Length: 300
Image (cartoon, rainbow, N blue to C red; front, side):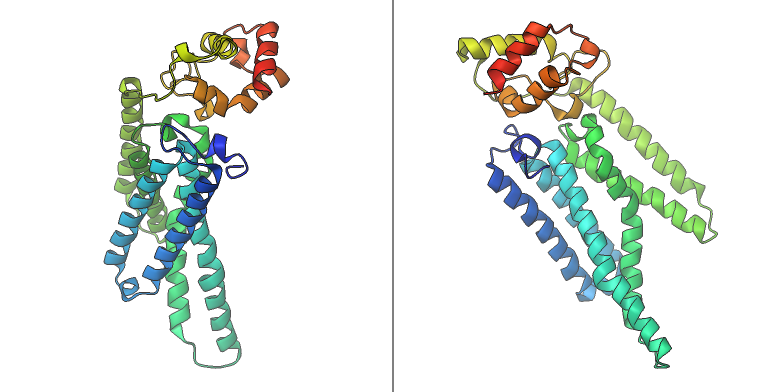
């Protein structure tokens, strides 16, 4: 979906003006680069030094969080970070964990001395996968939380959520070993609470910068469409929503400018005219005539 409709889901002109092919190339290239760096580290001498390796992976992960948010839409950045982590986890299983186990089983079955190296390598990568489980689950569902991926500091929030979820996972790992450390789960929960407070406060006070043509420069047809959008839709679908329920635009769909409307026009027609399930519960009382007009002008 993100590559087939890159213009809508992956590209945000307010972040970086890209063509669909450029965005797809950056996405695939970023995932490939991240995987290559991870593999390079795991095959280097630093792989046998847990603390330096962990610090390197944390720094590199933060750089990718930042980099993705500087070129893609919020939801596109989050899903690509999830794809990068997921790629690492899957390849860990297929190129090291399963082959290592098979080699050890074959050696035992043949009565040969067991080479511990493949098993140790498999264990190392299995531990990485274990700690990445909660972060990747969050990233899989992150598109349901626009207040996170649309935030002006989304990359920091992404780093914090990955770190906190891995920290909470550490508590359960220790628990399974018979070690109880409630301070870990308490500090993790406190971190999530502080993050939620930060999101609530900063979303209410965030500056908004919109770079687009002035609405006064629109032609008559575009002006008519924008009038309907501004009256019926932008209470929720705005960079600064005024609705009493939504504090961030649902689905990351902002309709403040004609550039925004043109970007999302297919979805506007689908939801306002075809299914007629937007506005939500028709809270702003969009008329059928207005729905027809949106279909007429935006379906072309």
